[in-house]
Image 1 (cartoon, rainbow, N blue to C red):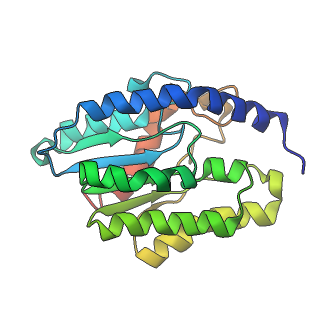
Image 2: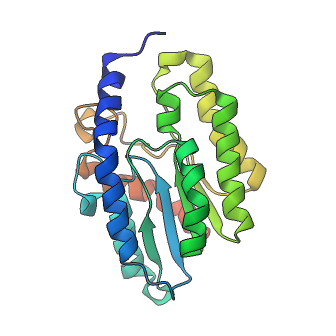
Length: 219
């Protein structure tokens, strides 16, 4: 099956960044106040791990700033548990520990891009999303699911079924869904890094604006 040079280059870059992103997550976790019961976990991949830009420029950091300025009485604390190269398989292995450690009020699930780029079977991808959402729900936390679109390298049928998976899971659990996280971003080359996959620092505010309407439903 043909895979574009762009995606091959992307895979190498994401692999090289994975260890660094893991260390960044550890640093964020050290600052967590265990007495706080209004934490928000962002469980994501390189899009949320601020790949290619400083972590402070990423949309998750902007979300933390927004909550401090606009919801300071609620004392929300954002835990960025995102790792570059993460898949739904990897997230499933990490999520139980994260839920036990932080006992979050909300979990934002931003995953799937790497599953799609690697051509993971749709049934496996969809089942993983289902398990992720269910794990959060049984731990009495709210869920926000964010959708992703992928290039049609594996055919239009695969691409369509991949994208539809988000809506199917969101409908099943009646949870808010950001239909496409990179809406109003991916179509503008000037907002994307050279790999054509990861957004630049200048696009991070738009990502936050894409997330906020649905997030406000469960704050």
